[in-house]
Image (cartoon, rainbow, N blue to C red; front, side):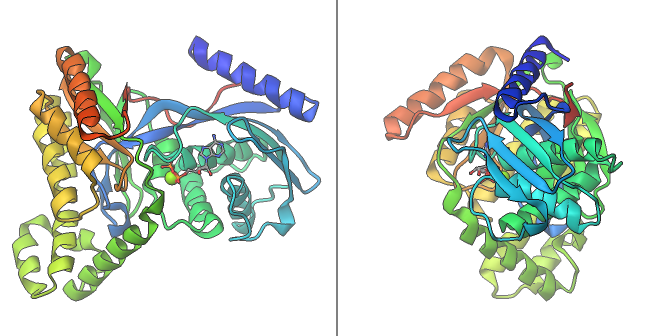
Length: 390
Ligand code: ADP
Ligand code: MG
């Protein structure tokens, strides 16, 4: 464990002790994620390729056996929330506490005897930036409870339960990528995940060793109003699959793309959605092949292609995301694309190390010239997935 995560663990544990009057049983961490490629494929049974950020949600937790669940976040100006585990009900909570309470609910609903806990957490994952602060929150709590109650669940099983918490308890129709990334990613790797059966492969992704960098540019445009648009895209994909007679768009082979599009007749909008999903799955496979061949530079154009598809076919980009991508590519980036669901959030930029200052400055200047809020840029190093810190 690095010195800094040791310091974070200690300070979160100390705050726990001041809040609850006793030391926690342990401290756990779960990261946010960035998706390298494979966007809007996870609810089409397709491929995604996230990696974990160094930014984490850190939770100090103590087991309780009296049915009481107490929750506190250092990042929210609320007193400790006290809930009864057997009274947890989906849709009953509109605050942040729905995420950790939802995890307890999902575990209990799946038959696991989770009898209460005291939780204090703090997170460095920026919320609402498309970097999955919500999954980090869910997974860190799930992992802590898994350990404290000896549940013996694997990372992918915890991810499924966290997704259920977010889908049913919180009421957000998210796919399985974020939770799996937070639970299962490994340092120095991207996670090639098949969202149909959750089979996974760790793909070496160490750009620094090859003189490259991956930047995350947070546009600071909140993607909070995107739920209706997300629902429309999702329904359009389901309609496409039904019209093509497959369970999910994942089942249409890339080689049959043109024939499939022709079969969609005058369904112009569905055709665009279908084209994005089928080509995006193929892009993920191409990126995996390049990385496994040790040719990370070659993924740049694939990222740029992916952005064009999200902008023109899936139509989930926004002027700020397009400006990051166009400016970065114009300033010499190897590739760039929006990442996450869209309508704001963040973009990723792949660049030679030496070009990073020029690209960063070009993006900042372009945002100022356009009258947009200043973006926040940081370097994303593929980091470890969820783990116990102490
Ligand atoms: P994203 O996952 O892309 O960051 P979401 O809208 O899915 O965005 O999740 C953000 C929500 O997660 C916040 O509105 C808040 O309810 C909860 N959240 C995230 N981080 C924290 C934190 N440190 N403390 C409390 N709640 C948090
Ligand atoms: Mg989220």
